[in-house]
Image 1: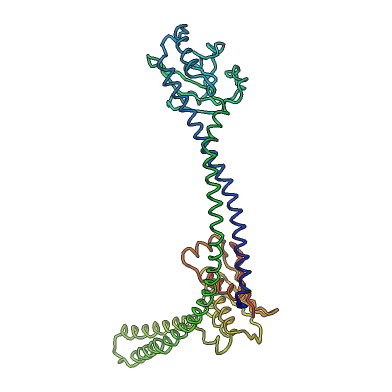
Image 2: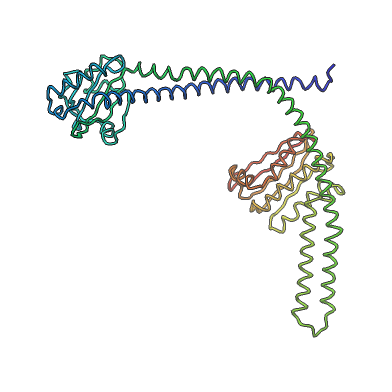
Length: 439
């Protein structure tokens, strides 16, 4: 018989798997549509490449060898030689028209005799082909006057390439190929690949369903384990911070205090005729040592606030805002009376306030900051508002990428405690940091 824990968690796993299946179907549909479009375009590109190769074979392999220089002068025998090659070996179901142009745009040959001798300015694309020597294919514009004899042949592709007469004169060889023949070539290329991709993706999707079920169970177990590890890590962190704070206070701080007193006493015991710079050095050393003690005590306050356990959250927050006054920042602290919060919530509120106030001190360039702590409707709300320079979402992401992850860690702790953190800021309009967590 399954345990109650199993009964309550199974629907959650089933729901996640159902979401995965639905998302997989949607992604499969989108991917299949995209893949078919891409494969179809590739097939069409391959069909056009095939059309160019067909034209190159016809122009350079069949027609160019029978060209004569006298073709440019309209010599009958030269025209007949080209016409025999075109009629017998080039024209067919695919190629329905052939034209040969000179550089001036004159049709020197066509299997449609009425077009021979007509002159039309060559488009830039055709002149580019004569210059580069590369074959080009494009859908024909049958509305053009140069294509008046092709209008009854249906949709056509023009494929043109350069050929040369025996004396090296460049000519433009142009074929008109049926668009349906070109498209059918493309379909023969891309349809088998599209079917293969479709069935492969469907099979992959079917295989992933049982894997997703197992993965969802593993993720659930991993999430539970992570929760336990996070709780242990937070507890261990608090204990370690407490230990470090105690060792620093009882060791280094006391040693520095003794050194400060010794230096001051040594300066006082110096003979009257002792060098003034020695007396000044001793007093400066004592002052520097006391400054170091104050900085270490401030650090101890951040590491582990003694007032959080001894005097309560209000006193600990008061200690947190004290250093801001030394930076010329006016502070307004408003903490509700008689707040009774669990220790973990107190720790979270304190850590969130410390992170927000550190950001104010380091980055905000503020002149005023207010800290408010209230409890209402079973939740506690912390608000830290400053009038500083503010920041954009992009700036926050940049700081996070540079390793400033304090706020992100506090946000994760708040989420795991069932609360949330909201940060509102804009350049020149200050920042509002709020934490709400069940009390």
